[in-house]
Length: 297
Image 1 (spheres, helix red, strand yellow):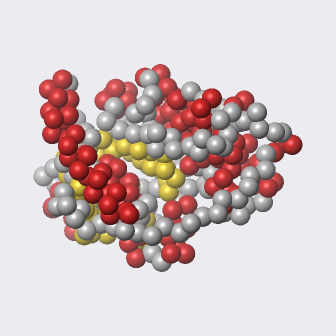
Image 2: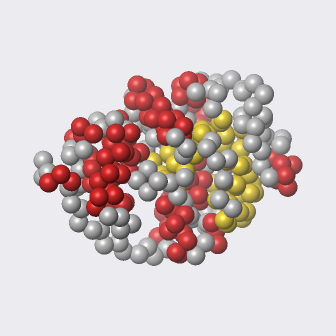
């Protein structure tokens, strides 16, 4: 379903975010992308959604090279990859129902179809009673569940959750991962970027791809990169049968903070500068009608 072939990404500042990354994702897989801040997880997501292009290598999604997609095909690709963000990115002037419905309105779906789809998604995330509340009236866990429902609105074949539990307590974090697992069991491929070691320990049977300083240092899954790329990475990639290395705790945390905080800041600045070069089309957002004749609270 998804193939990263020898992907590297270097920003104009000279910062190397990814270096010779190769891995494959099969349809229906659930994968944790792990690693400290600045390891390249968010860059990987931006490449997958074509918000930036790699410096070298190819990304194949459903056998299409996404770097060569034309605009009309790019929009279709973006609808196939739903993204869940750490900070939710809900529109605070819209209530929960409207946040989910907005993507469907933009796609030109019929009102009856929107009503049914949003209702089904609210049931899936168990928030039908919060439909008409605004983001400021929701807890962090509830806001993230609405964010997940919104990402599912266009029925994508893959969900990329970028640190979806970063702002949540352990109980809500567990709830979010269980929800994503349920979505995966319903047929959607799920990639979760996280550095939450407690979650990785809780779900240790799930495949983990670990990034450090833009390189894959561990892959616990049976899936391997395309044959022509195996040699370049087999010194770093471990199979599922190998016992995962024990994570050091305070020492590793202090080292990651010291080495990666500044690197992350520089990487984000470079990403912003690069994205500013691309002129994005303005979208005229349609006026959303609330279902059942209800008014906003």
